[in-house]
Length: 138
Image (cartoon, rainbow, N blue to C red; front, top):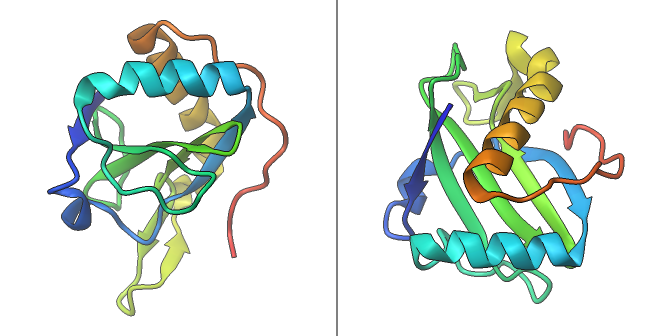
């Protein structure tokens, strides 16, 4: 798995309506560590969405089978005192630009474990057990 940072200038073209929360890890220290590590990329990919949101770094992901989607996106953001990991893995936009699940949806937990391992190795952080967060579907 390889992560390619999406700058704020490219964000609009990379983001899809399919990104859904994979997990939230409530740990203020982890949020601060990740914000510091991610700052090496420069400005976050998006402007803060709300008062409790300070950063959202978006990455294109290579080396992961995400068919039938053409590309895979991962979002690393804070929400209050939680680190929020999101992705469009297992989702695709239909012909009406509405998100729908793909056959890969059942593999989201497996993808989350791969992502957490990648982030732990790349950023030298420990990602604690998340609180149950559901699948994020509407």
